[in-house]
Amino acid sequence: MINGLKMKKIFITSILLVLPIVLTAQNNLGDLPDWENPLVIGINKEPAHLSFLHYPDQQSALADSSWEFHTPYYKSLDGQWKFKWSKNPAERPKDFYRKDYDVTKWANIRVPASWQTEGFGTQYI
Image (cartoon, rainbow, N blue to C red; front, side, top):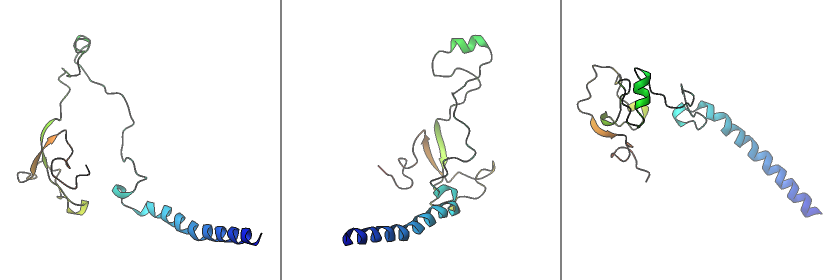
């Protein structure tokens, strides 16, 4: 009986000691930057939906039964892209989105691809 009470007391004391640590860790997630916060799964994310394509008229839409998208309103993003690897957001090139930004010294990567398999960052496989 005494051993049971001792075990119960140890168990309750353990819970009371660990509980504040767990609750504090949960509260600190809000202080993390968005890219490190596991609770942030999307910012400005569009709701999921089917893929839609626009065609100039009904006849051309019905004629295109393949997934090759024979419509003037579709542009494939596959190909060679300019790429600049930065170890963290603070090292990113400033104003890289501007049309007059010089990217001639940036590397080329294939798209679609994973930039890790293209030789940048740490490859996880």
